[in-house]
Amino acid sequence: RGPTMLALCLTSTAFLEAPLGRHAAVQHRASVVASAQPSQSLTRRAVVTSAAAALPAIFAQSAMAEQTLVTRQQAYSRYVPRIERGRDYWATGVKKAIGSSDWPLLVKAIEKKGSIDRIFGPMQLWASSFSGKTISEKTIAMNAAVDELRDAVKFLNVAAVGTEKGGGFLGFGGSKKIDESKRQQLAQAAYQKGTAAINKFIEIGNDGMGLQFQEIDTI
Picture 1 (cartoon, rainbow, N blue to C red):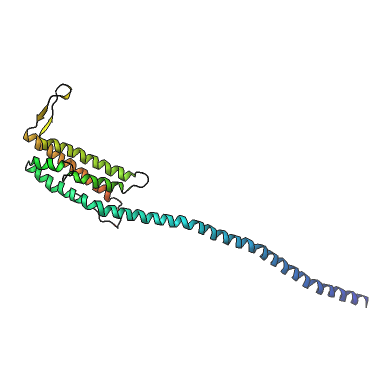
Picture 2: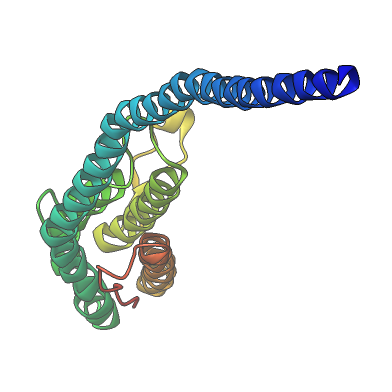
């Protein structure tokens, strides 16, 4: 009977301890889950907070890009048609006047607000539309082409006026008349130089302009 009672006591003790062990395990898992939940919640809050903080920057970039596009569209609509008129006059009116030696017409076209002079303003303004707070390389290159056109017009003006400064003492030698053949040569060279400058300006402007804009034809 002694061994039997001992076995019963051990069995009862085992039955009592087993539920307690399972209960402890459940409590342990619950504590792990509970301790993990604040971390997961914190992580979600951090993600939401970061996303919310990034939204203003995203909206600002989008608005800036849209504003830049609108500004360029306005500049294109305002200045490109005037540039095209100046290009066409150079390609036809100037070329014809040189061919017929119509020097008075060329002098008038070169004067302030003349048919040739009117191209410079729109060219410079359209070039500046490709810059923001700082001057872009594209604007610099386009303005360089404008300067080349100005140089060509200066030579054309010398041919159209028909005189050049004398080479006397300290430059006071009076004006020297240019013979007709030399005027033609000088005017033709100025025309070619101006044509190259206009084409260069247009090609730089067309480069990377975007599908929203129609490319400008060269001469």
